[in-house]
Image (cartoon, rainbow, N blue to C red; front, side, top):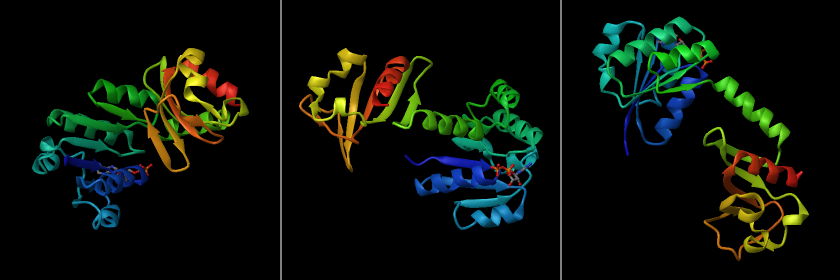
Length: 219
Ligand code: ADP
């Protein structure tokens, strides 16, 4: 489904969002106060405009309120970031993602109506730390505080050469196996007769504690 996105602030974060959205065939309006930053994305974005997004009239004339999603990716200038988020909210944008520099900033953004508040440096730091501590967890998604989906590498001999029925992750750990990846082959909703091999990547969902227990067994 093609949607309209406006990305305000074309630093590393905003530019990367722009490129990813365009690669996914979406329409992207890219806005920055710096001509240099706008020029760098002129050939990528659907439209790239030099503008001060803190100026409400400018955002109105760009009809920002008609966009499906607006990403406020202004970084270091927290005041500008908050003000722009407030203006796009008031102009009626239905879905706003704003980048926070710190926890207090994140709280302010949530309060004024940002639908998603992202904290890229902190989030990435958490992921890197998590990966260093649990190298067999290749990917994870905290569904809420208690439930996690994780992609775990089979690195312990105790799991190798056994079928899913034999391993019975459900009974043993309370985890549901939703996919198995062997090399480049992915089996979604794998049947019980699938044999688990060394270095296979299994995707499981269940309690965060259960995911931790399975991970501990891989160490
Ligand atoms: P990053 O860490 O993602 O590189 P930066 O803070 O370096 O973030 O980049 C933010 C971008 O936002 C810069 O390109 C800057 O020119 C732009 N910017 C800052 N204030 C405004 C504003 N009022 N209107 C539009 N763009 C702005």
